[in-house]
Length: 358
Ligand code: PLP
Image (cartoon, rainbow, N blue to C red):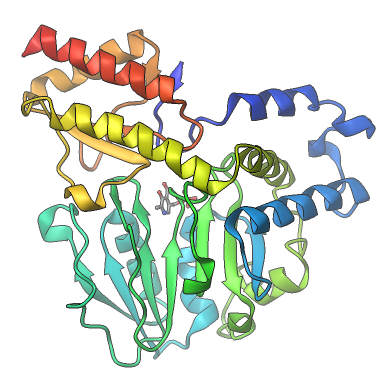
């Protein structure tokens, strides 16, 4: 099947086959990765290789630490203010979709978080111009969600924080294109869309930001604990980290993120043009300049046909196309691991469906 799920999402077939081939016996160790001590030399080699390949892929400067954590990106919504600011400190949130909104609501508990712009009144279909943004004068950071998975809105360039650092939730476009990490204080991402199974969250953090956690910060949320222990303070999500490592190797073998971005652009252009050239039969509400390369939401001119669309597509082995329950319609998530053939098949199906129902 071609699986268009938003996450957990499809993984590269060659990565799954490689994992299968060493499932019982990892490279002659006689153990599955699931059975290894996280402090043994075998697993240490796995986590160190994963970290170093990710550093190469994203060209992450040595002043940044890479942490492999648990609790999903949702846990980072709280960990970020807890680690970076005091309860009375102002911090800014630019809200371009539901994930940014959730991050803000959590941050409010641990800081003086403020929404400096929200796209809610436009149903989260755009990103404002950065010039007009009124940032709080003393905000310690500016938080964005680089790609809103539900609404399909993606930053194509980034604002700067006036007096603090920029923080980005990149859960749904992590490793889909090159990123200048040095523009950010923190980049974080749940793995389960582009780089692995659910269960591990990757945090890339400038090292000088580590070590200032509020006193109430639970130990598992304290970046210093994890950085000092190379993500091995407690038992990490070993198998997930191993799988991410295989994906990083695969992305490097594809030629790195410039190549990956080219493929992603090609897939997205194909799908968006099928929508835009359908004479209104299909519609994508997102402003063209900020349409996501990863998550493509669309509706049908005749909403009563949407259930049939999803059902018929599934019969043709294109699954999980139903939109998020909060917005309805359809959503095709076309992460790194979705082959061009999957998008071509979807576009052909869309044309055929339209011909039969227009
Ligand atoms: N941020 C974004 C952009 C997401 O898409 C998601 C999940 O889909 C989350 C955060 C929450 O991630 P998790 O389920 O890993 O907590």
